[in-house]
Amino acid sequence: MTDDPAARPADQPGAGLFITFEGGDGVGKTTQAALLEEWLTDAGRTVVRTREPGGTEVGVLIRDIVLHHRGEVAPRAEALLYAADRAHHIETVVRPALARGEVVIQDRYLDSSVAYQGAGRVLGRKEVRDLSLWATDGLLPDLTVLLDLEPAAARARLDADDKPFDRLEAERESFHARVRREFLALAAAEPGRFLVLDAAREPDALAAAVRDRVQSLR
Ligand code: TYD
Image (cartoon, rainbow, N blue to C red):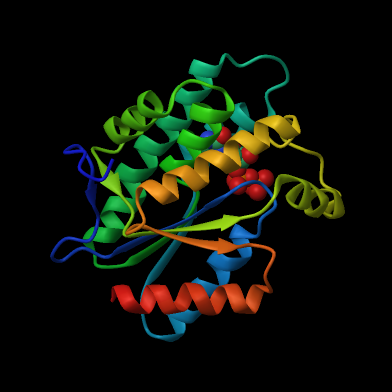
């Protein structure tokens, strides 16, 4: 996977740092992204915090379809909608920030498509990954933090939140089990890019582990 010629890390001379957070729903990605942003900002870095789907105006419209449309969205259409959101977001937000030498901290990226559409919807890992690489002209993160949590524990956290479930969250446990397995397989295939953390740990301990790894990148 890492020797895929279409894929190259963002970390090239003059480039900023591209860090993504991945994992199932309810694992605490947003909390960890916010803690890392605070730490890097305090250290004097310019940080762009963003997310997929929905990191641009066009993306907000796409997010509404993929998460809240009532009724069927064919799996291939769903994969293409996430890829369209990603293509626009990377070209208009992420690449310009990296070119300015900034740090981009992003909730979810192409690994979410491979896990949710590739494994969850059973469209195939390679096809879905290739679609995202085409959409982004081959941009890979410098670091991907995978917050790993057993689906039942993640579901309990979402229940405690008391918000209505979106289309993906409402999927069955077997779907979320496939998603989790795929995230772990992706991390095992690219150990240099991934940091896998047990999301059941205390938020402060997780944040410290993320900081250690980010420090080793700079
Ligand atoms: P997220 O923004 O993390 O949800 P929330 O704001 O409710 O925490 O992600 C939205 C959902 O979209 C999530 O269930 C995962 C799914 N998703 C995919 O299926 N494929 C993708 O490529 C991405 C980026 C997200």
